[in-house]
Length: 91
Image (cartoon, rainbow, N blue to C red; front, side, top):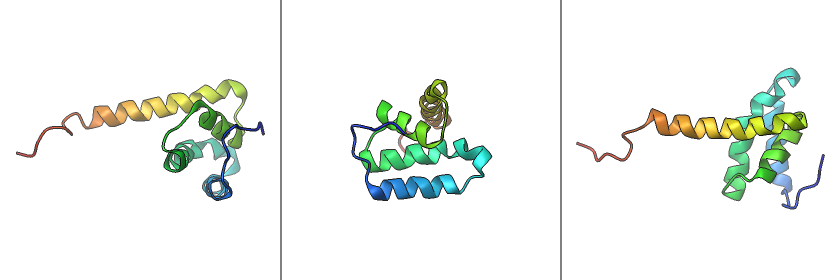
C-alpha cells in the first residue's frame, strides 16, 4: 500500500478493517461508502488522499480509484435531490 502524507491513526485503521470484514471478500468494494464516512468522521473532510487510501484498502485497481470519488459525488447529489424542501420553514 502506498504511503500517505496524512498520519492514519491506529483506531481508524481498526475501524476500517472491521467495516471491510463485514463484507464477503468478493464484495469488499461494497464497503466504500462506510469507509468514506469513517474517514470524514475522523478528518472532517474527504481528500483525494483519503479516496486513494480507501481505494487501496479495498484493493481496487488504480483506474478504479475515481469510482470512489464518483460515488461520493453521486451520494451528495442524491441527498440534495431527495430533500429539496429542507430549507423551508415548518408550516
